[in-house]
Amino acid sequence: MDYCIVDNGIITNIIVCEDDATAAAFGAVPAYDGAAIGAAYDPPAPPPTVDEQIAALEAENKLLRAQMSAQSDQLDFYEDCIAEMAAVVYA
Amino acid sequence: MQDSIILGTGNSRYLKSVANFLELYPDYISFATALIAGTLPVDLAGINDAGWQQIGHALNKETLLDDNTCDVMGLPHTSVPNDAFMQLVLPDGKYAVKVTVLTPGGRPMPDVTISNLTLLNGETAVTNVNGTVIGFTTSQTVTLSPTHNYYDIEALTPQTVTLSAGVLNNVTFTGTRIADTSKTFSASTTVRFSADVDSFDCSAIGGGENGEAGSAYYSKMTGGAGGNAGAIANKSNIPNTSQTIAITVGAANGGTSKVGSYITASGGAGASGGRGAIITGTTKTQTSKAGRNSSGFLYPPTDVGGAGGGGGAANREISPHTSLSESSGGSPGGGAGGNLSHSKGYDGSLPGAGGGGGWACYNEDSDGHDISTNGLAGAGQPGLCGLVWRYKS
Image (cartoon, rainbow over all chains, first blue to last red):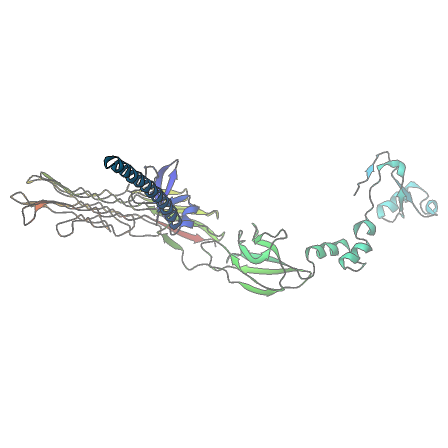
């Protein structure tokens, strides 16, 4: 597995290590597709954990419920307006 | 406890001799003769308080180890301070062991961790520069397992020993050498030789570069260039100091390999990759070239990769159809360039080898649609490090 030696944010070497522990002894960090010597070390963000995904879905669910409640209130208001206009027109 | 301080006035102590002293030594010559012969009878007859600034504590049974302390410690009243020290360090149910760890040549092995023993302060037992450590255990029968990181010594076999109480038990481990006296490393690691090793040689090759992909447009088809091989470095007769040596193996596509601070082999800085073929329109602008060969990895002698060969190119859309062949990789193990049947450049096949360049072709399908084939680059190979060592006589 490949690991990067990084100095001041710049990849100075890419080396082969058998495991993370050995890499750590060399001060190396995991490589990634596109890592190149001389470039900035900029690994992609790790995928969200299950807990993070659940938290994001809960937040989204809460927002959608609030939006639906607001739309329901707005619909009630429109119905009241129509009923009031009907009362004036057919009075 | 208080020290004594003499005033230095010459009157701190009294001397006393026998009653017939003047008869025995009537003149100075007889007195001096007896003194020189060690036969002059004298008692130290106590101290004179007037000659002291401060009278210190006496070193006697009361101050060193009195009967009360002996009772508390469970010692007989005839015990001496050393008995009390031993009782403190080795109370009932605690055993002391001196472990010595030696190389096959009888030299000390420092920094060896001994399991199931602890130091007096509870820390892990580790041998010192003399290859020894004194540790403690509460088990009369204990299995001692030494763990070391000397590359040239096999793992030490544990010993199960039955210990004696109240004394310093001695246990000695002697290592055995591994069968090899050379090794190549395809992944980074650390190596430490024991004091038995006299000197060593080392070699390294950096990672080989990937080739380049082919590039095909309507008017120009360019086969990818082969990747350079890694540079090779060697050094011989390095005295062993038993310090840890970092073996760094460079990754493919340019990683640098190192052996400690002794040698550095840059990635992609060795044998040159071959150029790719170029066809401009229907004109054969440039033929491809083979990758250069690599050799010279000496310690231990190992075949390492050559450079990648250049990719071929073809124009099969414009009449007359034109093509230029790919070239081989450098020997040994350099990846060949890509071609009509294998558009991707071939990967290198030995440590430090360069990958071949990709095939480039402009064509059209059965419906008359133009097709560009940009062959992928062949992959370079990671580097390699090697060590050869010799033992002291």
